[in-house]
Length: 290
Image 1 (cartoon, rainbow, N blue to C red):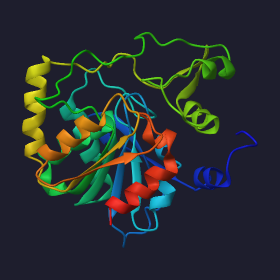
Image 2 (tube, one colour; image 1 turned 60 degrees about the vertical axis):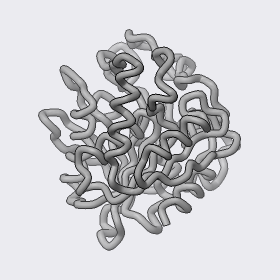
Image 3 (cartoon, rainbow, N blue to C red; image 1 turned 90 degrees about the horizontal axis):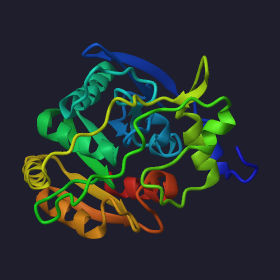
Image 4 (cartoon, rainbow, N blue to C red; image 1 turned 90 degrees about the vertical axis):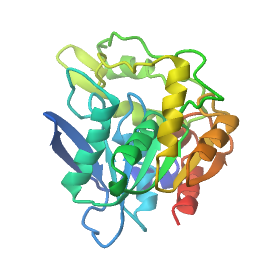
């Protein structure tokens, strides 16, 4: 870590965590807990974005443990979870439910960023009895008025192996790349995005999974129908300068939700809100989860 790393960040990532695995449909799903022993508190599960991992929440989660029993999962094919021969929205939803079953939580608050936010919405629809409330952070959720106009940018399919950690770290990129994240934040998430192999260092994610996008009009209609079926309160949070969930889309998604709250804009943030403005996000989460 840089000498300029602030005390709040160092304190957060130093908080002890417990690492566990649960079998979900034959795949080992990894998750972290910060205060699993505090069973008197309500449960909160954090879901990361595409090709990210549970450690993206390491400097957010500790600031929520005063009110919640906090957990974060790695979806299949990402982080320290195992890979699958095939992936689907339904299976990612089962990753969430499998973790909740392993923890022993009947009703939980779900918080998801980007890809994770879309999985949160699907979980609210498929398992309404398990979700008390939810927060979606800067997720692209198409609606008929604002369907997907073009496929989102994806990183190359082929993972490379680098001879040194430094060489691999130099190639770490966010998708989309625009961000205002501090160097110490990017160093931390990059470190936990890599693994050592016989040939050097490579990324943890499974390169064989790429999201499938349907016809934009049909995708938007299906998405709107799902939003209208969400029974629990859902708060929407987005970054001021995001290209993924701009203000107009955030407002439309909120209106489609029967109990939509917000949307709440995080100033001076792009898409990766939890990396760009982590303390502002903590404040927003504390406010919407009262």
